[in-house]
Image (cartoon, rainbow, N blue to C red; front, side, top):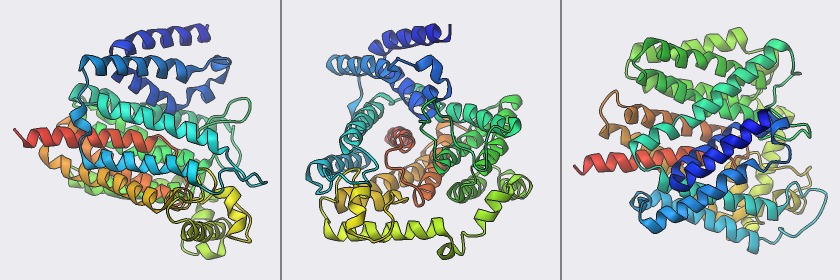
Length: 423
């Protein structure tokens, strides 16, 4: 019965997306952030659900372009240019990287499959940039991350209440053990980026029960991060709680968010996270942190040896033995991974792209009326991006679509703010 309902939803989405590709973009990002194929995997067996979302969306996007129904003005800015150049150098590193076709025991990823995946990420990102171009579409698109995180917050806390996890909580996995959030740190990152949306959507809601409901999700999202025992997640959660607290329309309530987080950590942090948190300051003495430093050193050597091409997309692992005598591993740092694999230009344009989104969201709020959705979303995107970038210092997140989802929101807000300024 569930599989039939899923198939019917995909059919309805396909027909609607042919005429309204923006809706297909929303469905695609919800699918990629939530990962329903790993939560309810039995309904998705033998079904390529994302292709059934993406195909009609691409066709609808093409038809809308030919009809002149899409607003390409929204992508005429430096942020989008930096993003395109970043992807361009990532793609070039597949063809020019010297270690792409090296096969050894440390080939963690298939470079061709990663290349194809990044092409799909870029295609959907580009369609999102063009399609999410007005307030109505922005409002629906801005609900995707909090909706996905709301369910996963429920899922994570239910694992705790039912005792169905051991030591550190991982995200949902299918019968083969695959999933988007099988790494506890990546799972924590999801909640870090979602918490600002719960907080600021709460301010936007005028009805008390919706406001209270949105805010009540925040402590449960904190608890979900604590369950992962992720130090990067803890740092990210502290950062977004602090930033949300100080960038708040009512300072007293906002500042109260900071001691509330500290109280939640002391009360529900758990012994495992608290033990791991002790090593944040003494990271040189802790094995996990020490191996990260070894990987960063190897990544720097890769960059110095291959400054323009990098070692090649998804080739950090197989290149590692040539630059270090330590056990090969991924970089566990998004910036190091990009610079080492795709070269200095890819790394520079990625930094310009991400920090352009941060600065644009920061400045956009000034153009919107206090209390409007755009006003609160500007802060939600700003704080969420800061949380993502904090997590990216400890994790390899260059393939995660949450960053591109946030970038689409930032680009739309910047565009709408510019239009208000030109009136």
